[in-house]
Image (cartoon, rainbow, N blue to C red; front, side, top):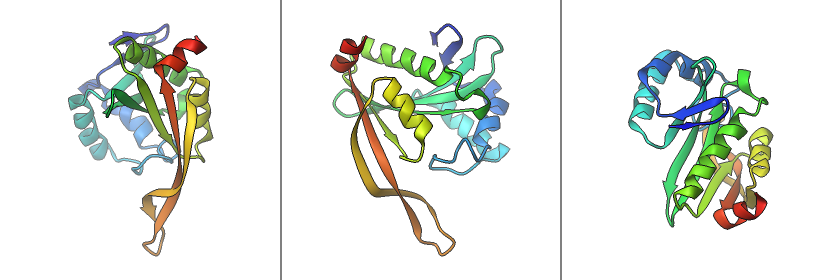
Length: 175
């Protein structure tokens, strides 16, 4: 568990079901995710996976105990992590994503992680701007490299991807 001024970053628990459903069922929130808005039963299954995972962190408001989002920190090769985040739209543009990501980045680098990477849809301007404010550098723009959905004819809808990277040495010089 990690605490910031306004947040608690922790493992998911059974009590988080309705908070998780609130944002994973919202089409606007999951627009850039590899899944569609979820039903309550789907969120219940997803919550079980998140409870079992040490790679998905719940972001809880200290003031109310409400889970307002989550951060993915997945292990990658060569002492690196991948970061991703999804937040309830009612809490967008209030600094919660930045506050929680900064805390996790500090923790990751303090335990010896060398690099953190992120993948982002170029259309998701809020996410890539946050990554840049956090000190990440865009290292690649892959064109039409991934698809999650198909069009009405069953053809894949190919999407571009930005790749971002933050290295511990670069982060230290920014602080």
